[in-house]
Amino acid sequence: MMPEKGSLEDFLAMAVEAAKSAGEIIRSGFYEAKKVEHKGEVDLVTETDKKCEELIFNFLKLQYPDHKFIGEETTAACGATELTDEPTWIVDPVDGTTNFVHGYPFVCVSIGLAIGQIPTVGVVYNPIMDELFTAIHGKGAFLNRKPIKASSQSELVKSLLATGVGTKRDKATVDASTDRINTLLSKVRSIRMSGSCALDLCGIACGRIDLYYLQGFGPWDVAAGTVIVNEAGGAVFDLSGKDFDIMSQQVAASNPLVKDAFIEALQQSE
Image 1 (spheres, rainbow, N blue to C red):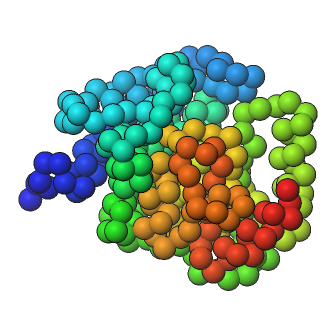
Image 2: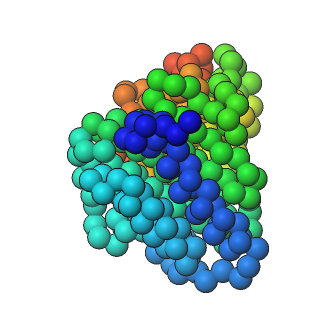
């Protein structure tokens, strides 16, 4: 049965269709020579990023002409976009572009829909590993249509922590980032850096990792992943433990059992 047009199920179905189509472009491009441009010193963009964003936006605009759109490549080119209460698709066409360029398989399409500024529908698709994460607010989270839930690890010292170092390479930023990692490393089991914020959030949602934090990114990196984490029984917050704000460029996530200990550790690592 087709979901009713304009329902959350319909939005999810169309986002999945768009993600799968973009995934095919990523998959075919993954094994070919890449045409790479630099957005910054280490921040990359490829033809594939642009092609995927165009495909996703064109497809969704056709379905929902009244909706608004925020995308990494278009927004980066046209300056900041404010999030309003209107239904807004927030898209990262290729999260993990550096991984894509290097042939490292942590690459995904991230499509989130915010309604009333609240992330409500989330789709994250890794076409290389063929993993499709989906969630609708209030309806649970799924990996390839099977329900997923956050880990039940209650001890920080037994937790796996994921993070990233961003794209800035000035000394102050790098030092702050590595100092924090040094402090946290003595408190957790180990640290991972996958190079994809959206997939790390999905890792929290399916219990592969227990703790995650990142600073300095766009709303397109987190719009879909935060819905998926929340629906999997995980917690999303900012680095000081306050409520998460999608436009704030900082995010932390964990299961609820280690949340307080994790926030304390993050504050001590400032």
